[in-house]
Length: 138
Image (cartoon, rainbow, N blue to C red):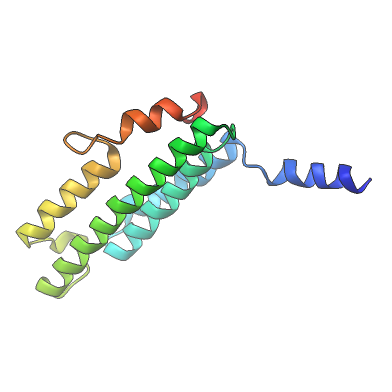
């Protein structure tokens, strides 16, 4: 009986693709509608963590490798975004997204968002992650 209970408990704790998509929508919306850099960064990080759950769903060696590569690339891009926001805040005195006036911060933000999306020229991580990801995650 205890083994059956543990099995049922693990089945309920494993995220389904529908649950993760329902969690992904509000996190992405939070990142899109925020006017403050820290709130946008939190929304992007939470979206990344939910997407990471989708990548780890089949529990194979390839999906584990893909999820680790995805995590490292996304954390690097998120750190770049946070650095750009911090530089802009020190130079302009505000954390408001609409007050992005420092040229270096704008350039770093564009590069880090391209890195996060897998857009060229920062797309080097994307083929390896897509190769190991399961079909529902794509």
